[in-house]
Amino acid sequence: MKKFLLGILCGFVFAGVAIVILGFALVRMAGKSVPDTPAESYLVLKLEGNVQEHPADEIPIPWLDQQSPWTVLEIKQVLEKAAKDTKIKGLMIETGGSGMGWAKAEEVKMALATFKKSGKPMHAFLRRPNAKDYFLVSGVDRISMVDEDVLDLKGLRAERTYYKNTLDKLGVQVEIEHAGKYKDFGDSYTRTSMTPESRESLGAILNGIFSVMVKGIAEGRKRTPAEIEALIDEGPFLAKDALKTKLVDALEYDNVAREQLAKKANVSTKGAISARDYRKQIRFRWEREDNNKIAYFVAEGDIIRGSGLGEGQIASRDFIKHVQDLKADESFKAVLLRIDSPGGDAVASDELLAALLELSKVKPVVISMSDVAASGGYYMAVTGDQIFAYPGTITGSIGVVYGRPNLKGLYDKLGLTKDGMQRGKNADIDSESKPLSDIARKKLREGINESYTTFVAKVAAGRKAKVEEIEELAQGRAWIASDPGARRLTDSLGGIDAAMAALLKKAKIAPDAKLQLVPYPPAQNTFERWFSDEKLLSAAMGGIMGFEKPAYADEIRRALRPALRQGGMLRWMPYSIDVK
Image 1 (cartoon, rainbow, N blue to C red):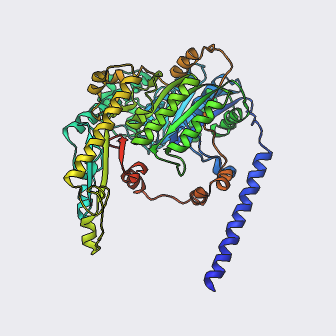
Image 2: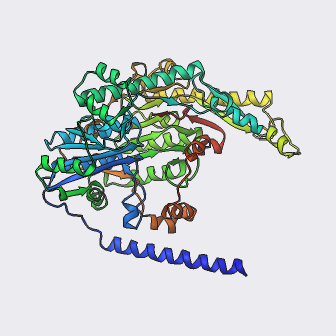
Image 3: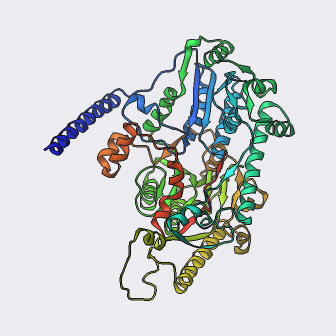
């Protein structure tokens, strides 16, 4: 009886929440209009937390929708619009704990440099700033922070997690086979430290990102790279030391920082307008523009087979459907393909490339790489179209890996036994209760080698290069795009503007033509998604109710990526790089 009553109560609660959300959605939809910018105002842009490529689903509750993460394109377009808006007299950037990768940071820094050309004052206020935060704002007119804070500028480190000791304690063995001496993805499960090849590749990537950071800070603060490197070796900095070394310009609270900007911009302190509110004008234009559009086609996340369960995945069936819809949509004149993916399933990445090759036959396409476009993420980029990458983009990783767990040791510890029969010598090749036999391992090696050969050949065809040329860059090695040795993998170093210029030229569209760069596929309203996709209901409710993931969730997520859980052969970057 208690369970029955509890069920009824839960039903009423759920119905009540649904009604409230529906009410908000209807009000929002009915009153949706272009928000006006107050005269004589200044923009406040808060850059904290994650920055992604594709807009998150809109939540039909105003105060929750305000918390949706920024996208790179939104930041860029907001700054471009604000630079030309005569009502906007200045820009205040408040940042700390930025979660974007280094390539995204380069794009945002370029957008800030474009705003600076307007001549409007730009100030920055830092909260618990890390090296990336400081890199972002180093080119503004004035940087300040609280005198009790710390500027965490101390260089960079790249870490890789190894699970072997933990798995040994559990009695779990992971069977790994790979093609390419740098394709050491499985080392996270079979070793406790880096191989010489891992150290070589990761060291080159770290050097490249460090060079990008030092150069960016030096140019922004009008110092020499040598001076900045020497200062970094003295970090991190107490606020007073950051002021003394002229890394920041003032120690003050945020209200004083805003007053200083308002004074410089000759506007009232009360004239602040949130960049998130200003962003609504950008989104409104996306929704209302029907013609002369350029698709900002986002491929973001792990590549998996079939359909996905939400953001952070490139599910082959869903992605191919988007490609087909884009091909048929005549309002889109060309496609800027934006890739931010470490790869994933080998078969799925091959399907994605095939679909994109068909798209390229119908519409002009140019590719822009974000933080990572490696392994399967690089594979889908070799359509033969121009490829642009940032100096800090991680790419390449041309290789194939197969992995599966052997849980026999764990089963023994638990007292669990399995008994069965089979017909065919290799029928147990994917059994988790026994190690691979020599015959099965040989069979897997044949498949992996064949997949690797195909990978190299398709890259060579797409890049109009000889197989031997690509083989020298392959072997599973991840590269940073600015590395001279990796230049054959891309066409040019540059961001969204450079890729757009090339795309307009390819599409024979005048540079001054009236066009709108629009994210594709379009973001959905969360309310609509709940009723169109039942499998996302629980995830959506978790977000609405404010459930927070524990601190160790990211580590678990990395260990159990969707592509790995699907099993089979993977075109996947050998490690998750977290440069701090």
